[in-house]
Image (cartoon, rainbow, N blue to C red; front, top):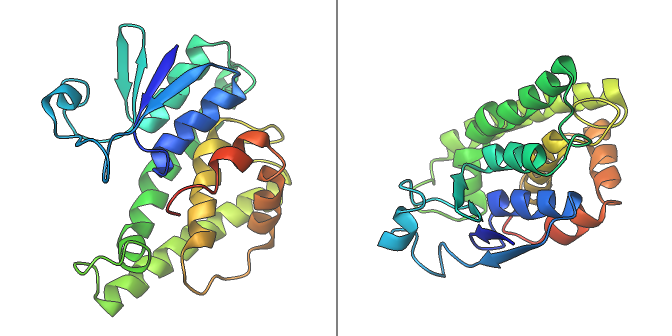
Length: 207
């Protein structure tokens, strides 16, 4: 059985749990992270020297980095429906997975820490607004993409990219700020809500 190390409220742990459910895999979860076992403990650092969740154990194989775990699960467990093999289709999924992990993630960092985590180290109004402006800008890029596909991020079919980006969209809606009207993103969020994996793991964390 697969073991997922990390607390269930973590956005990146939820990615992995949702992917496992989409693939019909049996898994168990161990609570690590803030409020639970310390990820700086030697036994955790032996698995991930970055002291970050999630970590996946599959027998003797250990892997960290959530989007890498998504790809591994699809490759290992016949997940071609989520991670298609043809080069062009796979590259499109990878493009949006990498966009989520880099551009989109970086944009929300300061605003999320200020408005959701209420971090005293992220209280500069100008930096909060700059972060929100960047975040909304990337969400407009997503809206334009979804307006084009009328379905999912990589195209007509649900893929690994929608697991990562779907959770990011949930975080955007859950963050207390003024949200620009993005009809295609709203329709996409509604569409994701029909999937059992998203209903189980999509909205159960701290944004």
